[in-house]
Figure 1: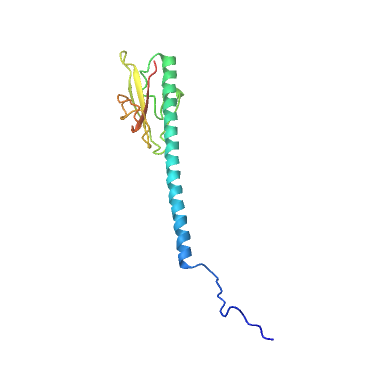
Figure 2: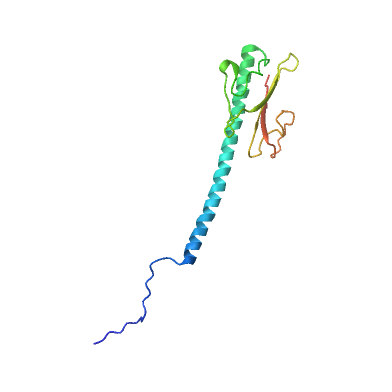
Length: 148
């Protein structure tokens, strides 16, 4: 008795077609692009959070100095990486450079201002001079000034 095969030709598939490979590579590329964008945004927000925290720490240091000395007059030697009296030391997390700050120490305008430039434009000032405070979400700087 002779058995007949229903299929005359058997096709043996050992791999993927070129189209299947291109589709998979395209999907992986899209996922990588979305992931890289999300990661970059998270890094920027993290650095900005650090900058805000550093400015608050610097503000606390200036106020501690004021409580000890009764003036901000030495604030030109304070701030950045050389804060006198060992109150704090802050350095920008991305640029590894000092923050921008301004200080006056005479009897009539015993004040200071410290600002950090943000990457996500969610600050409270449009310039690093503390004269442009605003709650607009497109400002580039986060500034703190004297509390006394």
